[in-house]
Image (cartoon, rainbow, N blue to C red; front, top):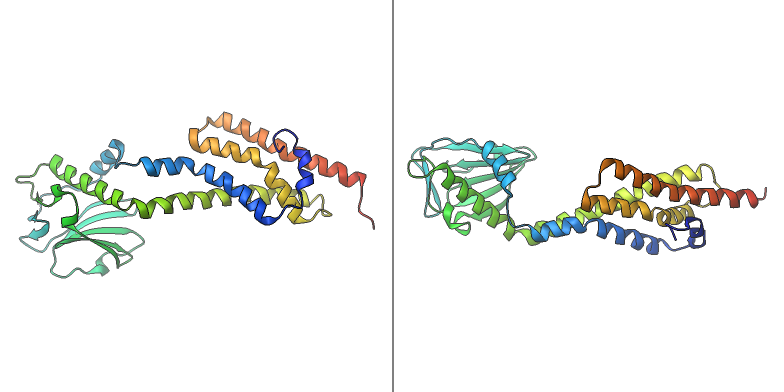
Length: 267
């Protein structure tokens, strides 16, 4: 009805909040479908991501090696290999790990002794034994005497992929949940904005009833946003569909105007 005859939505103006929110939630879940598929199908870093990481990694010969899953250095060594997009990778062979060296709202992955420590704002949030990572990283010459850059990156990428995939049950639901919440906020932004604009003309209509009717009337906009999230619509096509979607709410507003003028409130 919201697509064919939005003026008929007036009959549903007294629907409950729960029913309306559940209706919106269905569209939010559909909008997150592409994110859900991406999470399920994720099998590791893409070639493009690997290329970006390689181009931004500071490769240098260090007096260090990882032997039998333990970091060993001839002299105390600290080195940052990668620092991009709030993700930083270091090695640190000092006898005691000083978390105060790793500050800021960034995730520092620090290889130290037998572990990889994940540090955020000077706090260790996770510790992962090197022995639990891919076997390629258990034996790695960081002086690059016997190890080539290709072998180094293969070991890093395989370890990162295995680590990310092992934590998918944690970050997957969080990613999808964040997408659903973002969609709900976006939908409600359009609904509330329209409700405020229309209520400035029809103050006799309770805000709750306007919210309910406009939620249903905005269904076509939800559909447009869902298709855009899946297919990345052409900008001109997106604007065209957006215009059609907003036209539905305009038809509802015209019907509200007609009814208010035919039945003006009693003084």
